[in-house]
Length: 451
Image (cartoon, rainbow, N blue to C red):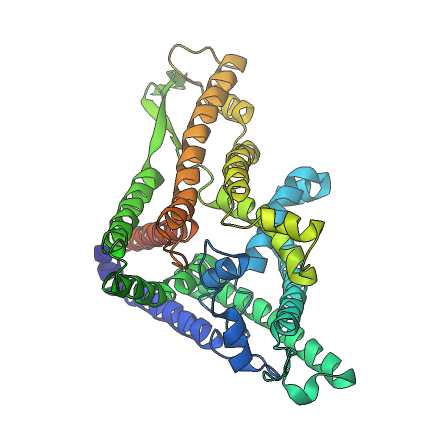
């Protein structure tokens, strides 16, 4: 990958694209440290002090995806999560709603309309999540305020904006600032797609997660120091975490490129005085068909109870027990996470790959799978292969997603922000970006050769 970047840097056009992409990333990181108005940052730091880990709480998960912006309530606090959720919703709706399905098949114009709808949905989700975050902060401040009144203010905005019209004005400004930050992040990602190296939203997500790496290193050093204070088990758990982290990176890299190749034989055909076909090739099917999407789907579904809890925050009774059951440290969460990853892996494969259409395309091009008759038997064979490959890929995703949770529960190393989802995103984006740079260098190579 480093060799690819070095070669791309030597090409003036690609060097400009790389520099533009780095500029957008810098702007993204600057926006991630600018807080919204009317907030008491000392009180905010007190509330967020224990909500840092990706696998510990929903707050920690969102905080990692936003590069720490969520815990600091900055203008980019919502991160790109609303855009990811919007894209997921639109993918599902394009399958479920016939007019949207027809629109998605209308070529470039249809894709532009779908992209415009996705932007509107993103802004709407940013508004909803910004409102939820505001009430989460306000309710948390109210619940944690000392009874003797020694900690003021007890509300989200600073003291003189806590009552009447001033409070509502402050709330509107804060929520709109979060929503505007969501729209700005989406625009920055599109600028990378137009003028940078591409893959804009993924690169911003990559940058946000990488920005949490110093925090993870610092937390590991703190656990290591605990070993010198009598907790000698951390002298084993910390190095073991590093080894597992590197092993997971290698495993993800291996699985990203793993594929099942179905042999294809094309029949010979005569057109005029020339003979075409007769060659043998293969149909590649990647093991990780859905990439990180099944994990994102599962995480989005399981975050619904926590999102509702952010609004209500019940202190006792049935609803408190209900929401506690969905805690990310509980066994129910792990079981549901595993089941949902499997379910969404099969679902995502179903909407992305159509064995009947693949079989028909082979038949129209005089292609056959050796030993399998064309038509329905070919479609059934491809469907069986897809089912087996999807199961392997889903189990791979489940292990990667659950390993940090199980390791934290076993060792007590909570709060580490490099969870399974984060590592998959980092490795996947790095590999995709390297391949994109390679393809752009290849295009320029052929262009120079033809000129």
